[in-house]
Amino acid sequence: MSGSVTTPKIKTVVEPKLDRPKLYKVILINDDYTPREFVVLVLKAVFRMSEETGYRVMMTAHKLGSCVVVVCAKDIAETKAEEATDLAKDIGYPLLFTTEPEE
Ligand code: TYC
Image 1 (cartoon, protein in one colour):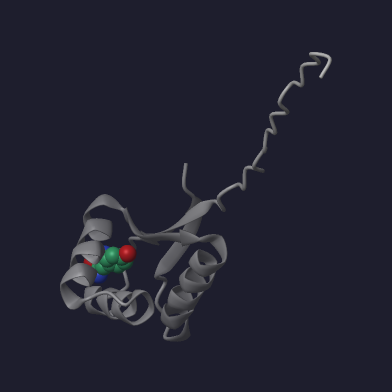
Image 2: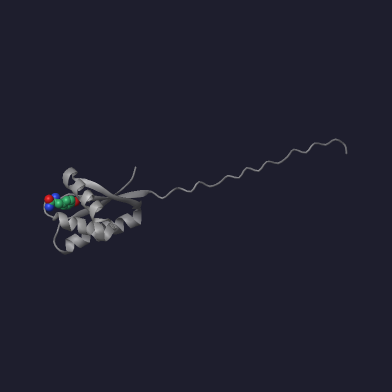
């Protein structure tokens, strides 16, 4: 050997950062016409809530004007909001569920 020095090669693995899909809120909006019992029924049917949770969410929207129902992926939020709003629309109630991105 003539005394040559080998430098060890250091590999740097750069993991691509995968962006987490944005989450969306489904929001229940209060109105003066939809019966309270019907709001709870829709929350139970579409969002699989218990009677107690449905009642609590309904009363929060009733008192404060709106209430976040669930936070989930965009397509699920939009589908559920539309399904819930349509159930009410079908029988003539103005009940409204909207969606918006979570900060
Ligand atoms: N405010 C309605 C009433 O007094 C009940 C209601 C609650 C409607 C929540 C919509 O998102 C709502 N009949």
